[in-house]
Image: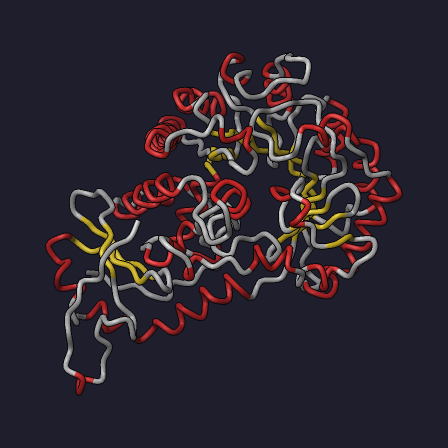
Length: 469
């Protein structure tokens, strides 16, 4: 999505910018609201909502533009720091290549999931010790780095996983993302006692929907096992559920969030399928259909909140809201360019291989080095990592002229590279992100945004620009 700049030439002697490409300019964005439009400076992610009958005045040389010019450099510096000056604070650790499921859209090649290697216990412990030494050089002493055990299915290597958590429970904030099939009462008790966050996966409210994309290698359903794990987690604060949105479940997203809410899920994610590998592209939904079903599900979570007083945050949508309201407060780093891969976090494979993100595991040309033989600082500067960390939506079309490019980030670099042919290409769901952003602006215009965000999200957040129009 791009929008033309509405120009208002100014006399050269005025000492002010004209909208000629040499200074701050505001671009209109139709957000589909009856009364309001957004105006933005795409270069800095600055935005304001203005009444439609005031649009011409706001784009002229009025108070809004004058006030913004005074702060434009500050906004640019803040955005630059967020995009280019972060240091890693988390690692996605894959303690095994194996998985007991054969999901249609998995980004890990089937051969690895069927017969790949586990990381031995002593090797995993050694890895966390090396990562601890690295984080001590880049993070404040009073802040713990995060380790998210990821997959494949991390609980297939449960003994090594649990030993590592026990040895480093005072050094890291731990999380486990699991398909829940091996998450029995004993495992839940172990993780809960150590305050490990637990993420599950479920794609439908009924088995027939889940089974359309998530089955074991033998073709067995896992739907009921996930529901049992959800029941067992009732009352635990640190758990969530991810649903992957495909063409197979779009018509079930509303009943799916109803199921999540009824079972006490604190936080969920409705993630568009990542189209990195060809299998995922076979279930890729149309952008417009995805946007319609996604927004209907978000709306339903709001109705449930109003009916019950209990909020269930959809984290990936909340992140889009935060990208607009408070960019530095966002909790996920997919919806920004460059993304968090190789900057805010990186991924560790079972053989010690280091990748910008778990999405790249299985793509050997994105292997930057090995934890056990290379310095992390050097790996972060390898071409494999810099190809990702230097991806910049300001430098390629159509993103370079897009009004929302710093609210969306043109995710995901892995799918852009593998599906569309390069880091200078858009991701798989350009239209979906556009509609999601318009919807977020409508909620802000209607004063509803807080209902979709975590309570206390703005604690410590400073308002740096507030101009009532």
